[in-house]
Length: 229
Ligand code: GLN
Image 1 (cartoon, helix red, strand yellow):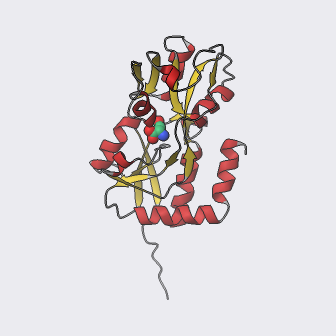
Image 2 (cartoon, rainbow, N blue to C red; image 1 turned 180 degrees about the vertical axis):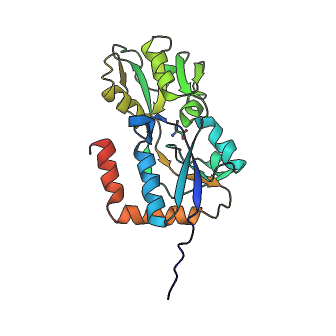
Image 3 (cartoon, rainbow, N blue to C red; image 1 turned 60 degrees about the vertical axis):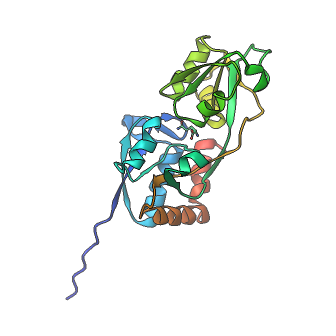
């Protein structure tokens, strides 16, 4: 007789902020969905752990990781030197960059330089907010989420919004927004990574899973699913 006992799988608590489509969003039946969400599920399957998503605001994630109330976050989070001081990151999984969004009929704003002394909307705690803070004389309005940032521009309360290009482009396309556009020239080149608390015992498994799905076609399938590429 041989008895086999399935080893209980580890469950990682993963922070997510579901208003950042196509990376994080609420899909049918209010299920957390998106490229990042599918990606993390595939990583978990490849590395044989379970995940429980915990919803929180983007700017709460780094503090939550530092306090170890979550084991990881998946949030289109750019790997930055500043964040690396307080959290660890997986290997990069997505190349991104910031774009300036303006009204479709605006011909005056053509670059970062032309945002001097203008009104700019950004999301709190993001690389977009950090970039906007460098513009001389700009009046910055800060919002909790990306949809609120774009709404402020649509409403005409600001001259521009700075956000991750893929997210703004997706919002324009998905909602058929005719009143806003992006300036083609990206402001930055950024790479998303999965952050964990410093010294996390799970970072290895996350990187291992990421390597597996990059190698076996799963990453490419998910990329095509969410970016129609
Ligand atoms: N990539 C940006 C950052 O890391 C925005 C992320 C987000 O708003 N979810 O700051």
